[in-house]
Length: 458
Image (cartoon, rainbow, N blue to C red; front, top):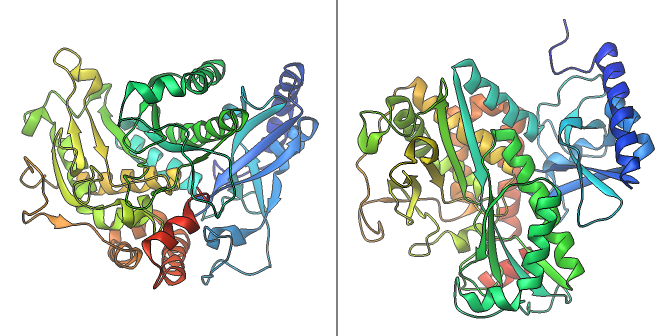
C-alpha cells in the first residue's frame, strides 16, 4: 500500500486540480513564472522554473532533476557514493502548493520549495526537506512540537567581479547607526518586500562586520522555518540587485573578519506548553526540555558537519568571536555553542528558547533543523541530562573545542549513531561524501584562498 507521501493517481489528480486554482490566482497577480527550489548537501540552493500555466502539471508530475545534485560540491564539481553520482537516473521536483509565495522584489515571479520524489512517485531518500519533515513528524508522534527560526546574516557589497575584493556597502561601527543611515533606503525596501510577502520580521539591524546585516523572523515549525530561510535569502538578493549590491551569506566574506552565522533558535512544546520554561530543572527547564538540549549538546560535534558545511565555516568557528566554538552551554552565553535564552520576566512562558550558535550561512537549513531535532529526540529517548553550565568565556577552560576542520567534523558525523539512524544510509552517506570531497578540494589552501573561493557561492 502506498505511503502517505507517495504520489498516487488520486493524489496527482487532486494536486493538479488545486494547482489550476493556484495558477489562476498567480496569473491574476501578474506572475508568469514559478521558481521551484531545493537545497543540495553542499548548502547551495538549486532551482528549476516553469511558466505559471505549467504549474498544474508540475504539481502533479514534477519537474525533472538529476539525482547527481545530491553529491554536488559548492563549486559545482561532483563526488559520488554507492547511491549517488554519475549521469544516469532522474527524479521529480514537486512544488509545495502550500508555500507558493509571490515575490515582491522580482515582478512576475513566484517561489515554491520543492520535494524530490522518484519517478514512481515514492519519496527520494536523499530529499533534505523530506528529512526535516520526518523529524518534525517524529516529534509529533511523541506529543511534541517545535517553534524554530534561523537568524540570517549577510554582507552587502557593491557589484564587482568575483575575483575582486568586495567593496562593502557601508562601513561604520559594528551595530552602528551610521550603517543604518547609509543604507536606509536599501533596508527600507527590504522591510517593504517582506511585508508584501506577509513575512513577520522581528528585527533587522547592522551586524559586526563592515557591510553586514542581520534579520530574524517569527518562529515556525521546523520545515516552515527552513522554507522561510531560503525565501529570505532570495528576497535579500533581489532587493540588493535593485540597489546595485551583491550579497554573500558565506561563513566568511572578508578574511580575518567575523563571518555570517546561521544561528538556529528553537523551543520545544508539549501539550501547548513551552518545555524550555516552567520546570524544576536548571533555569526552570522541564525534564523534556533539558533532555532535548542535552541530546543536541551530545551530538554537537557531528552536527557541526551539517550546520558548518564549508571549509570557510572553520575560519568563522573560532574562539572569542561569538561563534560557539566550544561544546558547552550556558544561560545567555554567546560564546557557548548552545545558548539558553529565558527572555524577559513576564514573557518567558512564550519566549524561552535555545540558540545553536555554531551553524552558519553555508548550511542546508533542512538538514540543519532535521538533524537538530533528531539529536534532541535522541536525548529524550536516552533521558540525558545537561552537563555543568559554562558561566563565562569557555576559551582557556577544559571545555571541549568543536571540530576545527571539515575532516574532523566528518569523522564525528560518521560516528553518530543517532544521526545515521535518523537520516538513513543514503542521505548520511551523501552528506559525509560531500564534506570529505570539500576537504580534499581545499587541502593546502590558505585562508585567503578559501574565502575567495567560497565568498560568492552562498
